[in-house]
Image (cartoon, rainbow, N blue to C red; front, side, top):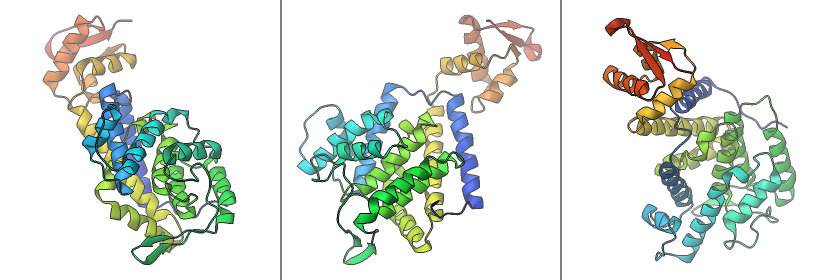
Amino acid sequence: MKPPYVITSRTLKLITSISEQIGKISAILIDRPSPQLRKKNKIKTIHSSLQIEGNTLTREQVTAIIENKKIIGPKKDVLEVLNAIKVYDSLTAFDPLSSKSFLRAHKQLMDGLINTSGKYRRQGVGVFQGSKAAHIPPPAQQVPSLMNDLFAYLKKEDELTLIKSCVFHYEMEFIHPFMDGNGRMGRLWQTVILMKEYPVFEFLPFENLISQTPQDYYDALAQSDKAGASTLFIEYMLDVIDKSLNDLLRFNNRTLKDTDRLNYFASLGKEEFTRKDYMNVFKDISSATASRDLKKGIGLNLFRKTGHKNKTVYQLIF
């Protein structure tokens, strides 16, 4: 059965905004980040996702572990980071549509932390807030069939990947298939699902925003539980993704190099264009910056220039 949810007007607005931002990221080549940016965002992702689950290590300590430096901290917390590093270093090796790949990821993520890493739970569990039960997941004997149904839903080609990733995240949390590690697996697998279609998600640390207001995350899960549908959680996660993409664009627009812009513009194949045409592609640069870019492009033998002042035209050199 298809998991229950409704596509609201807010959902559609967020999908439109996300799609536009992904297009901008592709246009200015942020989806091909430097090794330094990849490392920085991996640190954010690992630290934030584990922090949500109660890991006490600081971002500086996580950075030190990634750099193979020794730190002083709880053994369990250090092992959680070491496991997460292995998993996030091999994201592209996971198949988002494979339950075997999903279990392999859990095995790596929880290795040495629980005895049942990489295996679905075989006993009943409850999610508690204090002494109060916040969520009672389905019985253990239903977990394999429920997860098989969830992966079958992922394979439906008539559903948007952005929606499917949010639905999977919520439904997996509802099923609670593991004795431990469900939260970090939900966030990890949403990334794995998204990055197969949108490479930018390999290094987009949306967990960072969740970790800043974790109660909003848990409230969205609880409200969807109460409603019997993942609609509210879909809206919540799309909003997180939208804001994360916006942060990525805002940060990178300050550091984008002229050669990046020139190489991308040349790849568009415009045989003849003006400075205004160039600025229509890169809307955040000034006219002076555009002129400097184009002058450099001529020096690099990418373009040739004809005319003067407002009648200047550039031709692409093939």
